[in-house]
Image (tube, rainbow, N blue to C red; front, side, top):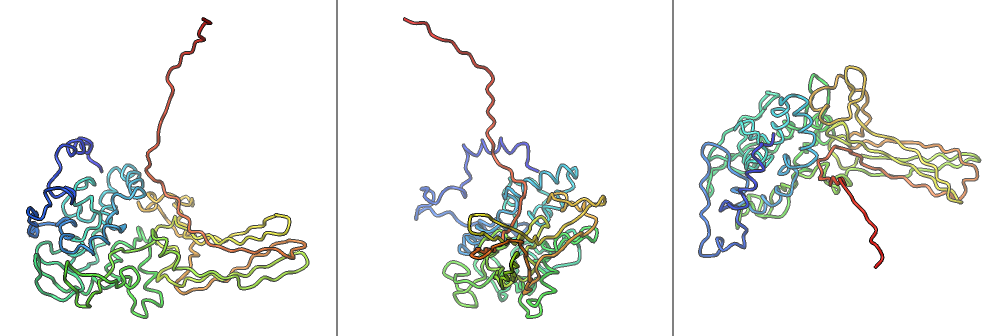
Length: 391
């Protein structure tokens, strides 16, 4: 939870700004006074800012990703606060093991301090030596001067490099994108991929979510692949571009009769290696079919693609916090679209004189999470009026 001293610390920061946080335009960063870069932390985690001093292009991409905002994202914050109080603090370990994994090692769960506030940091991922079967924290870490990744072994300017095959495998992603509390399939993104043609073809999660892009692995340093690096944007369900690439939609046919119209629609998962939508069950896809007839009257029908989790009383859970806390008892529905699957949907409208009707189909991605937001509270407490006399 956020420390009660966070506000005091923020006020103090107005008067004392650490040297490494000075803006680049500060005189402290003049050509003749460049600060020395700290040595690698041999006994703990390094800030991602430290990594960015050499790996600037990779750092900039990570900084724009949801991994860097894993603790500051207002959607997460709202659910975390709700889960924390609902579980009397037990949610901290559950939630932060993925959203701020360094905190599980350091014991620091104040999301305003440097390392925990960085979310899923560069150094955490590149300190992972192996993955194990511990469902609570499946990472074997080697913190220090050796950084693990897909490149060949060796030594670079400020640390050593160890080749790690696991960083190229979907199993690495499964540590946080597969969650089945009490056997209830809450998040099954990894299993969805594993059962897909993408897995059969050897296309790992990284193939789509960390594709090769033009760039330098470090400043003025090319990778083994030349001017190609793995993108650290880690685009997922928060990316509109990524979502739009996943789906293809087509009106396959319109059958008109005297008093009715049947519209056939094909919906295909063309670009996602898992079901769509994936992730928390509160995300949905809604296919709409609309017919507008001359004169302005509109007819509309829809199909919802979703996963629904019920509690022990048979009531659907609609809160991310309740779902992630493991309050689900059963999977009530799952009609989401598999990778490369085409769904054939048919909509029948009873419309007399439907000649000249316009048919439209579209798909909405729907997610309605609780979000922390600033709201102005304005209450008039007192008022007095008078009429001035004539002069």
